[in-house]
Amino acid sequence: MATKIYTKTGDKGTTSLIGGTKVPKSHIRIEAYGTVDELNSYIGLVNDLITDSHSKILLKEIQDRLFTVGSSLACDPDKEPSLKIPDLKESDVELLEKEIDKMNAVLPAMKHFILPGGSVAVSQTHIARCVCRRAERLCVNMQFQELAVEAVVIKYLNRLSDYLFVLARYVAHLSHVEEIAWKPRV
Image (cartoon, rainbow, N blue to C red; front, top):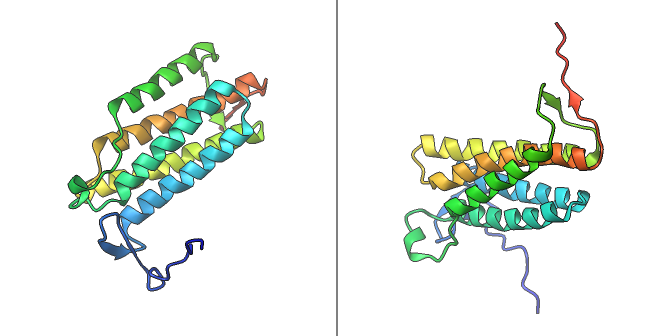
């Protein structure tokens, strides 16, 4: 018999962290890992829309790392040492930096702000970037509220949003889609 997807334990507005601690579903920790989950879904969509095989492989790896980030955020920090939660590493941040540098090496220099758009793949990559920034802001907010969040998580999300911005430009470049320059009204 298949396991039921519904447990009814959240019907009163609470949920459990990894480790069993109950918190309101409106808790910032839940909001943070929920936003990381949303980001992971958008990255899956971006992966479905792009054609560059190297980027597709890297996006799958990023999705794996976002599950790691989500696990870290969903864990009761007081119980985490006794649990087997995968770790995010500095090398994960470095990989994003190397990929950003590789893409930037073939892109024209940016001489203006760029409006999101030009193709569905470019636009969706920008949406993923925006969701990533929101996840980062939530984690920073947790840090300012003195709630446990690993520094490498914030660093990874910051670098990931940079990666997604450059990826949007790179996707446009590979697709021969002209970037839309922002021309401010003065």
